[in-house]
Length: 52
Image (cartoon, rainbow, N blue to C red; front, side, top):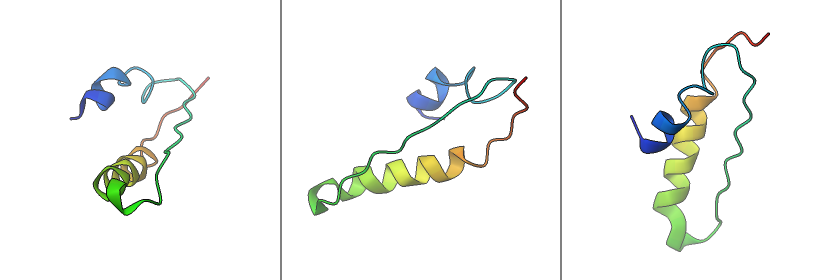
């Protein structure tokens, strides 16, 4: 239940078309944020909706 999920709640379900672009960094300094982004993108791709 992240802030991003709450912000996108209406777009991630229902009858809308949604495109999510996960931007990550190859830098070791951004590893934690990159892993978090990839985890979110992996979970988001499993959301099913039926756009009209």
